[in-house]
Length: 328
Image 1 (cartoon, rainbow, N blue to C red):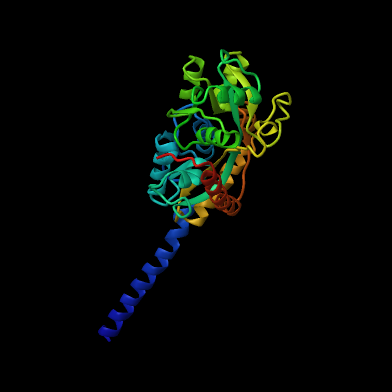
Image 2: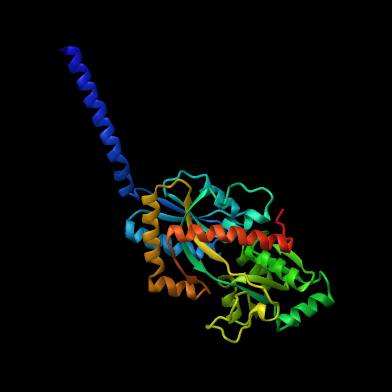
């Protein structure tokens, strides 16, 4: 009898432990977030990834009452910061404000990557889209894309263009421009668009392909000359500014940005992150803040974003191969 009771007691204890463990997982997920969240911006302060991440962090903090910090980790065209997230615990507390570069283009530009763009991330939502601006120093005697091409052909290799770093979208835009027009220009890599903009202001660069957040204030102040934009169509907000494609058929560079968690992050945590971020991106003050920097707030479901990223990886692999661009 004692033997039977002992086995029954053990069975009850095991059953209770199993029951409690099954309860623990959903309870833990429902409690998210229970500690500080880090959003890795893989470029310097004042870069597009940085200025996109900060309103999201602020609004998340207001909603959840937990610290949400933006952590700038730069290097290797954003891949240094992306690697931090790829190798972080899959619990939703380390996120990436990823870019078209970190999560699509870099895989084709670098012969060796510290993470797999296809399998190391859990896409949460698209965050924003934009285009690049072809901007010249005012001392350079050009006012149109046709002028830029003519000057570059007259002085092969003499014009220099800056970018946010080897392998970034501004770099790839320059390489695509060279490939489609047959001109020769010298590339100079920086650690971010703000840094290349500083050197353009100082006259140490002739031109840059840059995100609006880095150059729009200087253009408005008359310190830089806006030549054209990299979008497929003219921007209704700047109808007098032509697209590069109007002179160079087939030219388009439309960077996007999105929020990623590490692969393996629980589905309900990804869903909660998605719901909150989508809410934030729809707020009028956030949309206006982004628009002032030449950015359009967008959002998606995790599934939509995942499919889009897969398509972009394939698309940019073809573009990079055709252009011959390499980052190493």
